[in-house]
Amino acid sequence: MAAWQAGYRLVAGADEAGRGAWAGPLVAAAVILPADPTTLMPLLGAVDDSKRLTPAAREHLLAHIRVCAQAVGIGSASAQEVDALGVTPANRLALRRAVEALAMRPDYLLLDFFTLPDLALPQQGVVHGDARSLSIAAASIVAKVTRDRWMADEDQIYPGYGFARHKGYGVAAHAEALARLGPCALHRLSFRPVAACLSAHCVPASGAP
Image (cartoon, rainbow, N blue to C red):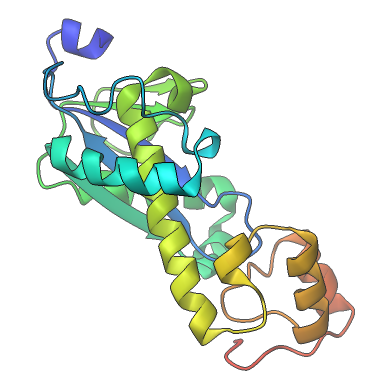
């Protein structure tokens, strides 16, 4: 709201999902919402940090976000890019790709905590931004639903790991599957639990590099 009050009209909020997962990409989204309270009515009081919402609520709100938004952009960084660059640079890469995927160039950018110094846009990193900014919260929902759907699809390609259930995060069932099957091509080999599996001579699953 403050950016709109300052005269900016194409304000994009951006956020990512999958930062802490052991497997799968980092997926980021950028969302430009209209500066019109009437148009935003379906989102006000409903959109929140994606982690606080149920999967059903996220899916429901995603449909409203796509109707209300002026533009939605999605970007990602693969597990291999996370390994090569590190988590924070890969996070920034995914966010930048999401902003660059927008159909219109924003004139201001709000991000959850991060800033993108290599992106020539006025911007602000907001601490707990997904709980304080409607556009960042909307982006968090888009990123989370997009990534969850992608991981569910990958479960068909890499069965046995339970990706459709845990989406690559470090739950007990994932640790058991990793120990039993070894890492696959979706795993982040630089992450300690995966690296420990490799050092313990786990046998890589089919499709692993």
